[in-house]
Image 1 (tube, rainbow, N blue to C red):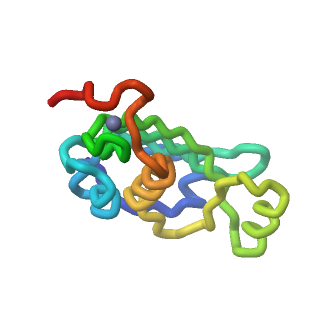
Image 2 (image 1 turned 90 degrees about the vertical axis):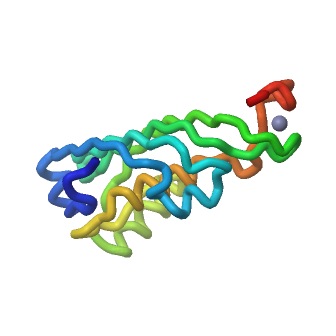
Length: 144
Ligand SMILES: [Zn+2]
């Protein structure tokens, strides 16, 4: 488990710090609401650094979660592998300017007590398919 669950995101980036850990899915309540099972765990790592002159957090998340196929309604296993580079904006104005320059940019506001597990959970929720379903042809073949 994690020694601490919050970090000062800007200091973390400038210092090039890193943390890694595992968390049971059952601890991520908002995520579990979208799953058919709370069994399993999430592995993640967070590393601070610089990218294009901006402080960034590099987040990596690995997990396997159970979703319900919206075609056949059977649960199925969905493998997640998330890798994100999240630039840290110092204020709302900077964030707005970056997002105007690059609408696809995934930036965060600096946070002296960033909740790492909430960030991991947010990124997993964003990565889940809008309509979960088996790969084509796999419906009904999952078994137990
Ligand atoms: Zn299916």
